[in-house]
Length: 150
Image (cartoon, rainbow, N blue to C red; front, side, top):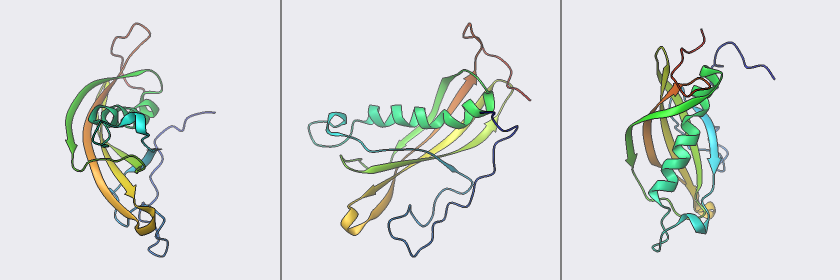
């Protein structure tokens, strides 16, 4: 499969209000859904909250999706510029990761990732639980920075 020459424009992320099982009514403008995952019991601490490090790893994976498309090859996380835990994440929450590119440099791409949790399916609540800014750098076979394709 061939990658498109440029990133596709995202479709509006505001779902119809008539369907309560959809994502939240207001999502990040211009962001794309890049990943969904549900934490399991092995991902939680003794209090039943999901480990922050597990969430950070998932954000790193989700954040890499758009830079990998832009770089058309190998990338590496070079910086976590900001990471905010807004609410605890519990076992059974369905996490949706939305990302958008905030900066494209000569060798690097910075993205903003927002994470929403869908919880309590009987009385659905959707809350923003985490947001972060990460920078990825395109690298060659030797692990050295390389220019992004034009």
